[in-house]
Structures are given as structure tokens and as C-alpha cells.
Image (tube, rainbow, N blue to C red; front, side, top):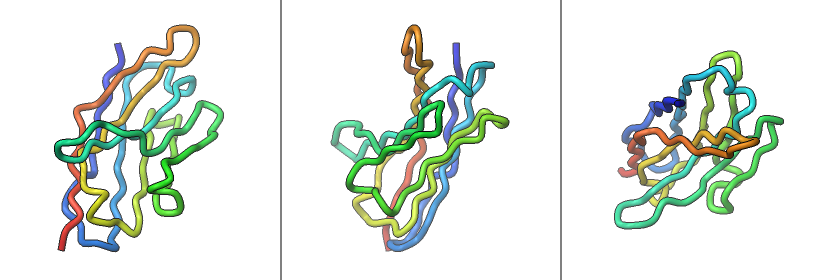
Length: 118
């Protein structure tokens, strides 16, 4: 069992920045793929950014050039640096931990609220 905990959300003005953190338990973090998803009010949960165990990254088109995903295997942590935030970035942000081979099992955190408003 893996426990995933997000932190760092809050209220920020348009154009501002926030850094989300994701802490995961377990001893196989360096083998996991990590990702961030978000769920705006009344909408479905959507992919935002991902980083593999080999440090390959990919992003949703809506956040390319503004958000950066990273990870620190020594701390069992992943991060999402969000810059130039827009009101449409408002959502609950969830961290996803995928175990990779052989089971590709998903674990989710409880989410952290990000609100972009003046």
C-alpha cells in the first residue's frame, strides 16, 4: 500500500505562481511514474503533467510552457511548479502514483485546492 499526500495549494492572483508537492510512502518510489491531474468544479478529472522513472516528462497542451513537473527520489517526492496562473487553472489538483511493471497500480492523494482569482 502506498500513501500519497499533496500540499501547497491555495489562493493566488492571475499571473502568480504556486508550487505543489506530493509525498509518497514506500520503498519503490524511484520505479514509479508520477503525474498530476486536476478536476475543475463540475468537470471530469484531467491529466496535467507526468514524469517517468527515467525523468521523461509530458504535459497537457493547456499548461505547456507554464507548468513544470519534477521529482526528487531521495525524498520520495514529486512537484508541480505552476507559473503564469490563469483563472481556468482553478481546480482540485491530484497526485497520481503508478507503480509501473508488473502491476501498473494507481494510487491517488486526497487532492489540494488551487484557486486563481483576483
